[in-house]
Length: 174
Image (tube, rainbow, N blue to C red; front, top):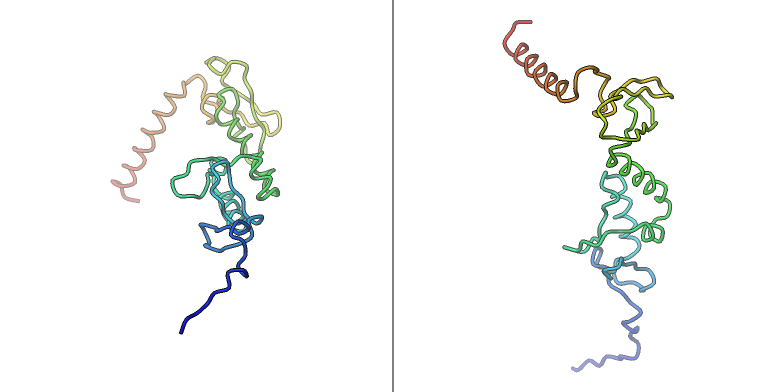
């Protein structure tokens, strides 16, 4: 018995695309790719981006293709999951503040203010007092104000104090 296939009923393959994550075949208009051109379905992209948005490396999100190092851009997020744009913008602001030595978040409880100094390399005037929550802290290290001790001295002291307390707890009776 011979089987005959009617090729005229097949859908043109150029209209279909294959997702390398879920292995589904779908209409090409339901896929998206970064500049690397690795196409994935919008459902997989949405899941991938939503899961990544819960991570601290949200801004470093890359194409999910194996060994692809192309980063997602804000314009890609706008097309995939625009509801996460405010979170993306907040992450950019936080990264900028954390990486620029002339800015530091106030360590006060529930305070989101940012302290700014004109010259971060200046060792004088390290003490900062938040105008919002009145928390005083050292601008250089972010810890409680410790003037006149240097940040390095306080760090060294805290290590010694921590190891001493551990030794005392291990070698003394309650």
